[in-house]
Length: 299
Image (tube, rainbow, N blue to C red; front, side, top):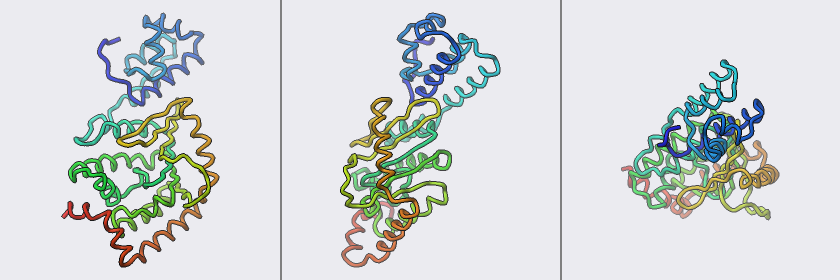
């Protein structure tokens, strides 16, 4: 194996999990025995199967050959590994865009299911440009940096339509008018139209006397490995795996119980849009504050 290696990527967990399943289901080799057959150390073999080491296509070829997988199936596995190792836009990050955004995009690209819980903001995957720009500028990002981050976010959004995605959004988030009155209305209309794109949006009503976890998160499922949860924190996100991610299954069940149905959520979104259309005077001026910097920066 080469001495100089790239750092592990999110997709290495998927490849490693697949290789572990092949060893357990198709051979009688223990982890120790497999390492010995391949001439690798036990720690190296363990890191490979746990996705804690970058796995090249050559590594996969050596492993499936050692496991005596039939040629046709071996070629199929290697083709999948090459696809997994293909570069995405996140491997060529934009200036000013944190590496964390690329890491998240890489996870999303490998997932077969995404579920958002959004407490105070519309999820990034569902944000419109005016909303996202006003939000980022309110966080004191320079105009040029905010624009580059929007480009990266827009690229992330291209995953929609290729993966099963649904979002639970707090009604509080839906009533926060980033982008000013018109930007807010555009954002609500965008959410209303999401159903036509096969995206499920469930609204969690305001003021429910129910204790829910107070931060936003994204629950991601994968074809050949365990779920991962991205928890939003200041300046980025924390990734929870295995036992740490397990409690979120119960939280998803709770969200499903307290959220409005898809039809009821559509009705609530239309109600919020109607209220936004009627804003006048002080309400309109107050809402416009969130967009002031954005508008001045684009003129």
